Figure 1 (cartoon, rainbow over the protein chains, first blue to last red):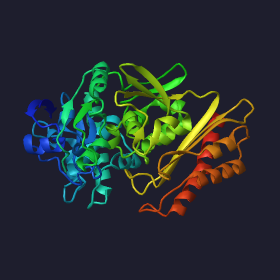
Figure 2 (figure 1 turned 180 degrees about the vertical axis):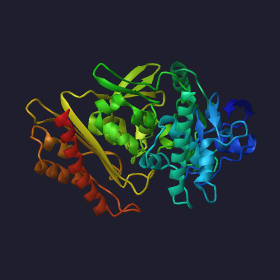
Figure 3 (figure 1 turned 135 degrees about the vertical axis):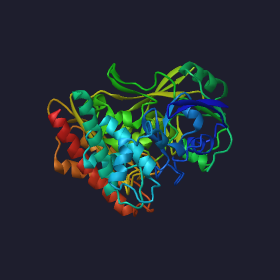
Figure 4 (figure 1 turned 180 degrees about the horizontal axis):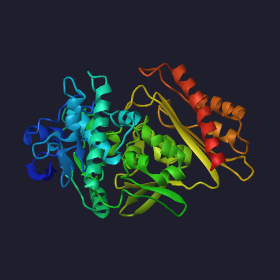
Length: 162
Length: 290
């Protein structure tokens, strides 16, 4: 069946079987391989994307359920060729090793910062508790999300003053 | 992993959904947030021939307080409950349970109505509802039925919902006077089912004695279990540590846990005993300052 999903700001129409999972549509049909597949059982969270701004596990959503809605993937974070502050912060704080969980962690981080511009250590850890990282031990992921929050707060203050 | 093929319907109103269910309720399965159904379909434990996706239906996502009830539309997401000031003010048990359901990402899609209709015996909401006197509103083209959750949950994965009915609302009575509640859950890791969990709810009368008591247990019996003997012991009594310890013993006896990867049965029964005592103390503490 035909379904139209706004992916990273662009409305795209696909002819898909209803059983196609959103993660597979993104990777194989939309060509956006930044969204990873890990456990495929709603546990690890590496397939997390934003659906109307809220993090969801795209291995547990049928693509047709996203019809008429907005999906943001890691590829949607870059604006005008510039890294999103959360991407820059993950780079600066070395918030990744193998990188497999990183797109999901960054998206969960941006959704958290949107709701809570100054998250505590505990709040960050709570927010990412549905996402597994098997190599960094989370320390630098938490630092990176907090650094991004700080950068974004300062940028917002700067623009208000200006 | 891929589910078997199915037909997909996405009605745009409750009325349209009800007429689909009236015509072919036997063949279809309702998809709400999908956080339990889709994994089961991927494992092929469930292979419905047609899915009716109600996920984008308007009018089923509200949380409000009318006619003596705190009402939640079937599509209220677990995280909507976490975020709700109204729930925080009016029902401690719900408010305490919501952050412990699944994980923060799953909570963005999973719904309270879907969770109750799914009737997973290890689900958290059913215990909350059993402790708080919750009810389900089931709607069909022939009208509405209000079903107490005590009757609604028949057995594991089995409810009283008829094939032509849609669960449209979940509601709990508003407290009379001073009330408090708690939900205590032990889990091995975020997102796991409970090793054991306990929902408590107390309402105090004008004389300070317990007027209403609710205790329900998760993951320690073939279905969510209301600890009726313990509840009856409490009613009419003044709250005290000794009373709560006695109620906890009765509740532990009402549990029937299995030894599995989450722990031995005796351990789980002991967790029930400790959690009931703590949960009642917390409920009494919240009620005394309400």
